[in-house]
Each structure stands twice: as structure tokens, then as C-alpha cells.
Amino acid sequence: MASQKETRTQQMETNAMTLTRWVLQEQRKHPKATGDLTQLLNAICTAIKAISTAVRKAGIAKLYGISGDVNVTGDEQKKLDVLSDDLFVNMMKASFMTCVLVTEERPKAIIVEPENQGKYIVCFDPLDGSSNIDCLGSIGSIFAIYRKDTEGDPTEQDALQPGNRIVAAGYALYGSATMIVLAIGHDSGVHGFMLDPSIGEFILSEPNIRIKPRHEIYSINEGYTQYWDEAIKEYVQKKKFPEAGKPYGSRYIGSMVADVHRTLVYGGIFMYPAHKKAPKGKLRLMYECNPMAFIMEQAGGIATTGEGRVLDVVPTDIHQRCPIFLGSPEDVKELLETMQKHK
Image 1 (spheres, rainbow, N blue to C red):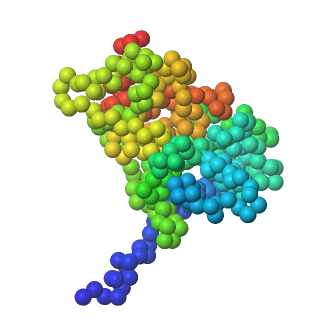
Image 2 (cartoon, rainbow, N blue to C red):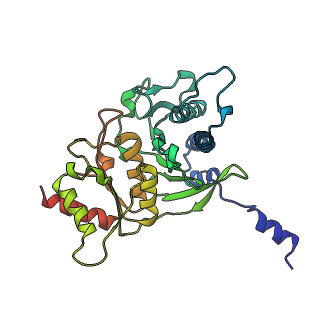
Image 3 (cartoon, rainbow, N blue to C red):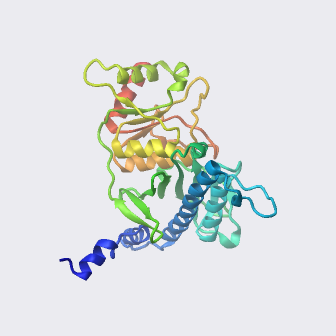
């Protein structure tokens, strides 16, 4: 018969590795660390928890028409993506750790008030794939953190850094559960933290995530096939109709967070190429491509524009677009060989 102590242990983990605890543990490896990054990451986690709650509430309200979601004065509610943006911005300003914020939802960078400024720059997509909410599809948030590396007052120009200068990057996935995937620095690996709603904390659930060298899945929006370059058409055709072996499966959700997360966990390749209708690509470099490329490389994968590393692209505009191909190294290398053949 199990003892009372064993029963309690089965009911609740009493020594869980929370995200904050893990970041503090990593911080101790760097004697000169100040704890500022830890404080900023805590603020981001708070925003993600609030967005997770809002996403679940919005889905129910949309499906079942809950009238209580309209306030008594009849004010129109904010859309969920704008609400998510406000949560991110307010949490990061209140952390006293940021000086410039770049968000998909606003045309210009936000310069944090002088009394609230810190040393970090954060680029983020507060709610990626928000058009999927009505059908309860997976959505997420994406962020990348940089240091301000210039003297003087912060400006939008300070945010225009290549992805190889990222200090930390991550994404949250609001799916069957809420999860944060995080990479800090260039030697800490990629780790997944699942939100335990019973205690309101992110718990380390997927330590040291590594992508497979190859996997039989490709992810691309095939609705644009007629606009692709010949190299992309040939590569996808070879995956569907191989000369030997079984064909690759096609998986495409239309939310970058969900598609990249599946690619990271199972392996394979995710592609969003430039094409005739979008000659510079569709996805945004600073708050979509760069964070995902950083995470993918830290997990042992490859992320390329087709011409070079995504992380080496020097941005000239905060909303700059970029083609991207990322995933298992053998799959991405095979695509690059096909592209090289067509040059």
C-alpha cells in the first residue's frame, strides 16, 4: 500500500523545473549576468498566459455568442490580435527592461518612455495565425530579443539588426495546450515549457529539442503552385512522386507557429518561398523569420532564404519580408541543391 508521501508525490510535482527556475539556472552559468533578461522573459510569460486565456475565451464567445462579452456601455471589444498586442507592449514596458518594441500590429517602432527604458529591443508577432481563431485552429506568438548596441537615445534604427545578434528567441503555441519553446544564447539549446493551468506556471516538458536529420513531411501552401519558380515546383514534385521510396506527406496549417512547431518536433521541411505574387516573400523577417530561424538552428536544423542564412540578412525596414525554407538539414540541403541547379 502506497504511503501518504508517495500519494502526494503522484498528485503533484514538488520539485518542478519552471521556466523561471530554468532561466535562473542558465543565468548562473554567466557570472556577469545581471538578471535583466530573466525579468524580461518573466514579463513575456505573463503576457502569454493572459493571451492564452483570452484565446480560449474568444473561441467560445465566437462559437456560442456569449452576450456577456460586450460591456454594459456597449463599447465595441478590441479584436484579439490588438488585445494581444496591447498585452505584450504593456507587459514589456512595465518590465523596465526594453527601449524599442517592434510589433506586426503597428507601422512604426515603439520607443519606450525614458523613465521605463532598459537595454533590450524586442520584435514580436503578438498573435500569429489569428485568422484561424474562428475555426479553433492553432495560433501562437513569436518574439526575438536583441541588445541595444549604440550610444544615445533609442530609435527605430536600433532594431534593424540581423538575426545573428539575437540574445533570445521563442514562440508560444496556443493549441491543445499552451507551450513556450525557447532558445537563449548560442549554447543553451532549445527547450519546451508546458503551461500547467493548475499552478499558472510553465513547466519544462521538452528539454533539449533536436530536429531529425530528415523526415518525410513537407509544408507549403500549394495553392500558389502556378506562381512558384521552377526549382520549387521540381522539388515538391519529387517529394510527391519519388523515383524510389515512399512519397512525402503534405501538412500545412497556415499558422507559421503551428507549422514550424510540427516541423521542429517531427522533422521535415517548411517552405514559404518568394513567388510571382509575392516577389520578396510574405513572412516578415524581424518577428517571424528571424526568431524561427534562430530556434531551428539551435535545434540542429537549417534556415535559409535560398541565397544564404536567414540570420545573416541585414534588415532595412522593420516590416521587411523574406522568403524562408527551414527544417531538417538533409531536407533543406536537398532543396538548395535543386535551387542551385536552376540558377
